[in-house]
Amino acid sequence: MEDLSFQHRVRGRAGGSRQNALVGVVASGNLEVLVERTLPDAECRLEIKTAAVGFGEVWTAVIGDFVERYSPGGLRFSINDGGARPDTVSLRLAQAVRLIEEDGQ
Amino acid sequence: MTALLRHVAPAERISSTSFSEASARTRVELLLDPGSFVEFIGPEKREISPHLRIFDLPEQFDDGIVVGHGRLDGSPVFIAAQEGRFMGGAFGEVHGAKLTGLLRAARQIRSTPVLVLFDTGGVRLQEANAGELAIAEIMRALMEARTAGVKVIGLIGGRSGCYGGGGLIAGCCSALAVSEPGRIAVSGPEVIETNRGVEEFDSRDRALVWRTMGGKHRRLLGAADVFTDDTMQDFREAALDLLGLVGTFGLDKLKAEQMRLGDRLRRFGACEDAVDIWTADGIAHAETVPELSADQFIALANRIGRTSRDAR
Image (cartoon, rainbow over all chains, first blue to last red; front, side, top):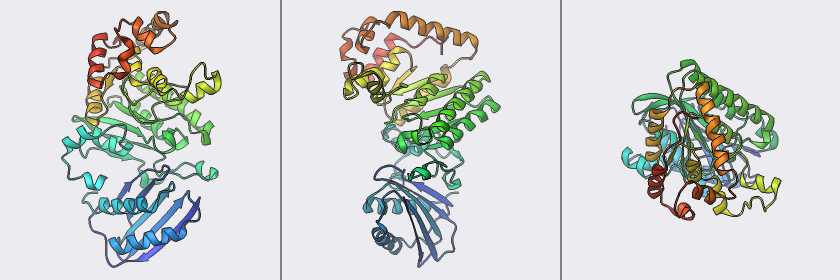
């Protein structure tokens, strides 16, 4: 297992009013993303526990692209990864943002 | 998928979603009345396994089981759903404790039934002792809940089936519904082959596995009360049917179940294969049973009749 952590300054706050959301499951080639609205509006944090050791550079690129595209301000992402491919990671992160941007508790 | 599917009408989603392919969370969402589910100890609580990190294995925030309460056709229910894709839906310490707690809550409240959506290979080997203890605690909590008047309905149709301790817990339920992909047993195919040899059970013979442990055989043997097709709509209807059918539980029912099992052993104990059992049970062309569509099989099962309501 390897732990990775990323912190980004972002343009603006993510929309919606939900406090948290969960997508995905921890399985081979899959991951779960728990997203919580707990940070100041201009901050975004991602904490990753991954079964695939040594892919820090790939994570840096995938997450840089994600933050630039979605501006997920105020959101803390906690990820348990079972060795998902970068495209699956991008998809799950996008799903997590879409879900927390819905209205509700 | 959740985000993309939210524009699809709920009625369309529940009838077009496969139970076996859905995640535990999707199963809970679609089985219950829309928006009624409230989770206990949700993923944001991070009640993860204390053991997996020691083995350098990934954790899941809900430890592979979703528990909570909601409404089914307007009436309150407790519900638990195992995630069969996380470690084969296996029981660990936290996973098991969440189900035990739910059953104890049901025992205390008495009037609210419990739905258990099994999807498990059995005990998680990395936390074997804690997992085995969890199975025993769940079985005790389940029987105490039933004794207090709670109906506990098992729904089995996941890709991991219902094996090991999960098979034992399923055997304790008031009633079970099963679909074709659902399998119910204690020892799985590979376990039997390892212990008893390939001549006893060839685990690579998928047809043998399915006709011995699959949903159709379990329904015909009376181990499962209802056979259902694989959609969420079918499982929802099966759960409602069974909640209406289950009678009171007590010593008389256990004695009747013992007689039913003894009778079954006398009638079919000498059979070598599931097809022999179906033939002995009076099914014409029994060898074609595995090929029947769900509708055809349900018609056949209805002709054979349900398990006597006195037993189980």
